[in-house]
Length: 538
Figure (spheres, one colour):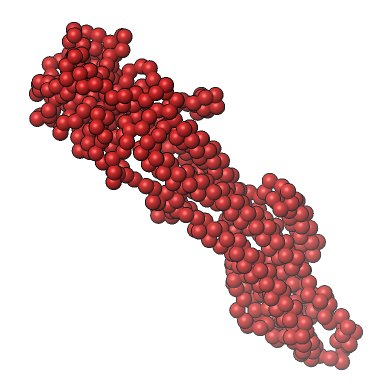
């Protein structure tokens, strides 16, 4: 649709105007809008899919400007434009898409709330069964983590509410614009239809000729003067002059003010609805922008420090390879800890007395003699000092030999397994790691200012004392700088809980540590992320 109203290019002789057709179109648009209004959220409906659905029937009200605009331009010689563009500025708003996003935010918020609640419960359970310096630091870290988790949950829930309320407002204002503009519909001005007005303008401009006089006789403006003008004493030229004079008076005093009033009403409708939508949209943007984009900023970290005596935990900078005492079936765990704190665990079969595995291209051979002595032989990197726990009755940490490259083993190839199974040994029973004191403090990837005391496992009959120096340990370790063989890592959470926790695990399944907690709704999560951090979405 051309948004600039132009004057007619020729005299519209005999075009007429079918008022019944125009009225039928208006009536259909009114019925359609009333039905749509019942489906809006404000009226308790499910909502309108998009803004075009509301604007289309409302646009019938713009017929006034289509019909009378060209005559207005021809008479006043004023430019009239931007009407249809102003009305259509709300087109293309995907209302249902925004509602879907709001529901997605709501689902994410509920998921985060459940996860935060579960984390809080698990932290409390762990703290009840864990004391000592490491436990206190873990508790401090958990407090910040939980606080940030609640902030994220509240933020996502707020975003959901802001978008839902904002789109409800937009829908209402688009409907208001459509209704108000449709209310401007009229097919006449002071009884003159568009065809009549065009003839009057042409008469006022002096563009009509004698052959057009029959058309003027049907114009309502000239009805009071028809008998006088029909007199034979007035020639054609005088009649056209009188018609033109009467036309000029009516156009100036009636038509132009009526058209200007309609245009002013239209401008007010567009301005009011635009301001209302703008305020609602600003509320959405400002509200989401005000959310904390980094609620986890300042999460505490601590150096591991120097381990307590006889804990079996290596000081920061040590790299170790440890092996647990084989179980009744000859199966043992080999755990590799790198200098950067990363950990890998392998399940090996020592029933034949030897097992070989490859860790990051480095062959590692584990042997167990008939007297129970465990030994580790590492190939690369060369130059590592190998420390062996030794057989029963010998001093722990006795030196063991180094073999640059281990001979192939007859044992089946091993596959790296998650570290998580090692945690089970902390609860009592099963294989136990190298530490001589359960839950001994250990260095982490975070750093600490002071050493951590090991603490005790609450609920045990009594603290497990350090083993005497003459008693063998259950594991051996390879280390770069010396130090006792040790528990590969310290748990932050108990591995299992009562009733509800077990049900929750059955429901969720064992999560992969690399999985996103939002895997079930990644699209919705990305939308939250884009809002909270627009650069991320680019």
